[in-house]
Length: 157
Image (cartoon, rainbow, N blue to C red; front, side):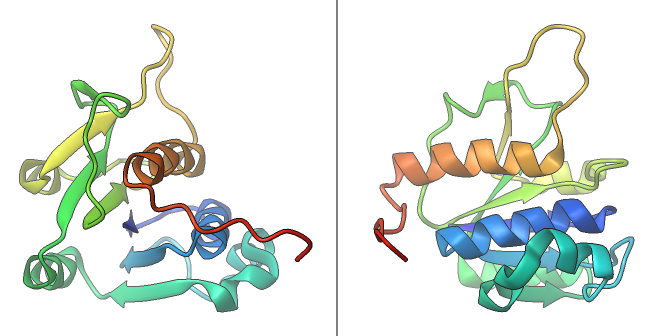
């Protein structure tokens, strides 16, 4: 299981997702360009001292990511408010990459078109969307639960 950040706009959200991924032992694919430098102060603030533990692969473009993904045999699961399938109804696989889009614009249509699966989080009518880091955490939690991929709990560390 991996998490992909498609051209993220907000360093604090990316830092939060990198911290979560480090804590859960999940690799992160960082698809550039981003709206900030990967070493941005806000990214460090949100990620705290967890960033060195984050398993980050940087991709210079979506095309580079897509070539790499296909060679690796990963499925692409897109989190989007445009999806018809609830994240709770979807079936996840350990070889999934869960992708979140840009905070300002999501992902372009050509990215949505190649996703193996698109999922949405059910929300109250009239609400636009959740924070991207919150969405990533909710869907990743369900995917890890389904695939029995949570890390072992360590007590006292």
